[in-house]
Length: 150
Image (tube, rainbow, N blue to C red; front, top):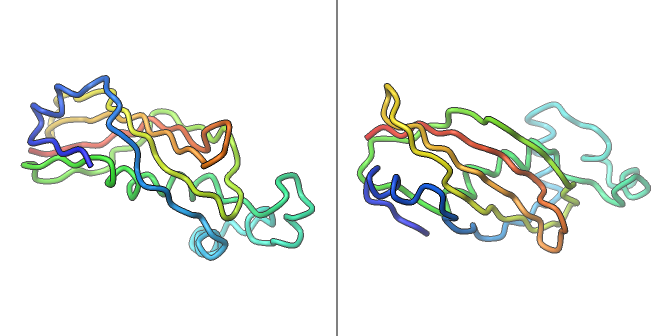
């Protein structure tokens, strides 16, 4: 866990790799819960029998399930002390280069790309790359934006 003591220390780290999260295993229960929460019950996610004969050989996590892990995983990589709050502002670019089969272990690598003053405080840019253990391509690459209020 990398700890920044305020915005000035964070600004000094722009352009660096902040580290990796712990590994997280995506199981069928998590996939099913996400399907129930979002209404996305496509068979490649929720029907293990049919999915076994499908293009991925098993069920796969929803792309947006993989994306939804970004907050949990990035909080394991870094924190900023001495600020009032940090809130999600959105994303500039999002791609899902490879599927995440059920039972996969994933983790996030985090690169700090920018810290820019704005009217609420600072806009922080992060490149988050979610990789699958044993995978040859990332499962998700996203340029995330947060607003940090001192």
